[in-house]
Length: 94
Image (cartoon, rainbow, N blue to C red; front, top):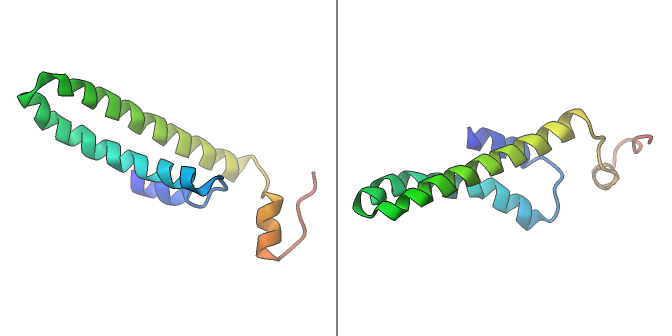
């Protein structure tokens, strides 16, 4: 699920690029922390907070990627910077 959404989000116009890359990688790091903390919680109970926090980070990253992707696909026009970069067509009116 995160791989497919991350692929779609990678085509979104988001700047700076380091932020975009961080948002794509964040769910995978959170997923690894989440699953590993299940086992660490059996050894040391405060790791239960890691389960909660990593789940929240996954949800926030998913929501951000989904919202930006849907908005740019359905409601916004192509940014002028992207239109000029591609070299084809005229910039959208508006």
